[in-house]
Amino acid sequence: MSKIELKHIDKFYGKNHILKDVNLTIEDGDFMTLLGPSGCGKTTTLRVVSGLEKPQNGTIHMDGKEIVNAAEAHFAPPSERDLNLVFQSYALWPHMTVRENIAFGLNIQKLPKDEVDRRIKDALGRMQIGQYVDRYPSELSGGQQQRVAIARAIASEPHLLLMDEPLSNLDAKLRVDMRSELKRLHTETGTTMIYVTHDQVEALTMSTKIAIFREGIIIQVAHPLELYNNPANLYVADFIGNPRINFVDGKAEVSASGLTVNSVLGRMTFPADHLKDENMPQEASFDAVLGIRPEQIAINTSRQSPSDIEAHIYTSMPAGSETLVTVKVGGVSMVIKALGITHYNPDQVVYLSIDTTKINVFDKKTENLIKYSVE
Ligand SMILES: Nc1ncnc2c1ncn2[C@@H]1O[C@H](COP(=O)(O)OP(=O)(O)OP(=O)(O)O)[C@@H](O)[C@H]1O
View: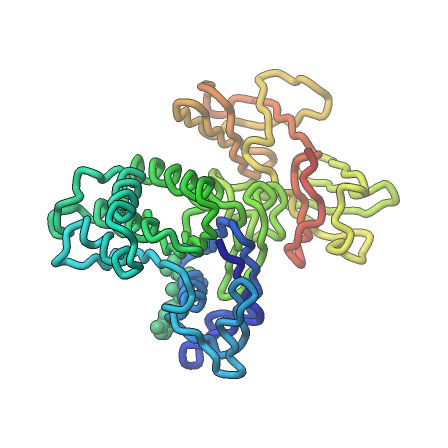
């Protein structure tokens, strides 16, 4: 177990400013996922923590011990950082069997033979590849090699496990299985993990915390549910959630009792204690964006309440356990997630009911969250 603190980390490649004043604390036992689109600096952050890259500014502490201090040109070598790293590319020794690949690091640690055997068996069992223990990497598929690389890393029982898109070469079913294995491993061992992915489902399902990156800047660090329910701004709201959140433009007015937003969805009012005061604009009237998750809208074929919103069906896509329905309201498209199989005809009139306590509101100008989702 390990606590890692990154403070004011800047990383340049030539003139390119890749990490911009990154501040991040990974608590002992966290499963911290670095999430963001390609090229936003996730891997670079991992390489800086592991010691493969030297940042130009900032400090890193591991369990209170300074391992990086750029101003003093102090960079502890990777071998002194008690961590293990799994890359997207598996980097197995080609001339060693699976067993030898895993045993190699354990023998360096001078562990007794029965302990080495136990760890190899346990790690391969978790990754569901026990039957390949005597094969060479060239005799395994890419996905199997990837799982050997993960098994090798977890067998060493490091205090800190860094993983860079370790499931990217696996097929969809195996990826789901491996997610659950990694999550269980984390719960059982309490190993601190830093995990890089651009797959938001992977991030939401496994992490205790997610750091959202955008062009080298951390936008928000939060528990997955908090990130989903209360994204800090439009960028995070748009990035998290599948299907994507619906955005609807509106005109906001502030009053003593709270906030009113007029849009194609009609007039919605939000009480003052649901508002994020520090982000509220000074103006009494301003442009706002409603953020409504697809499951926050209920759809009915008849009007259930005077506040229901009339809409027209655009498409209805049944997908087994749920149906994704696209509707049009006053020219605006919205996606609704309905449980079970429901059939609608194109252009059919339906009525939408939206739970306004749950939805988000953003300031269109700053793009910041101004109204929380409340349970
Ligand atoms: N060794 C390098 N030299 C120069 N530029 C680099 C180097 N490594 C990374 N970069 C650049 O730094 C930026 C961030 O790269 P990084 O690999 O950290 O992104 P990422 O978020 O992990 O993306 P991906 O999901 O595609 O792996 C990219 O623009 C990349 O081209």
